[in-house]
Image (cartoon, rainbow, N blue to C red; front, side, top):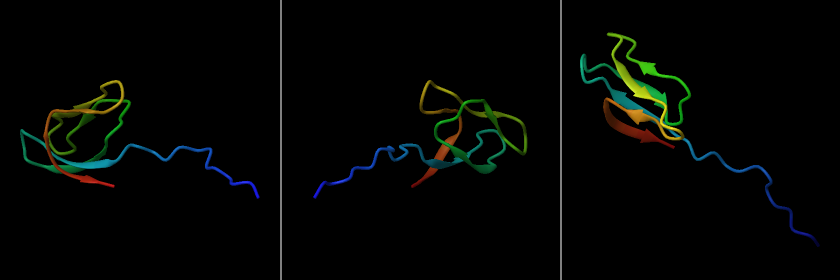
Length: 65
């Protein structure tokens, strides 16, 4: 009998809870982003794309997944 393999790789990205440095608002972002992420409360930039993983400008509180 032939063993089947999974041809699709499992994702390596996760979600992270980030706290804004300016207003201390918390929000959840994807760790591999394609556009700049701004705080929903004050508009401060909290993450930007980094060619793979996000470059976070806030405080990482928790990683999910």
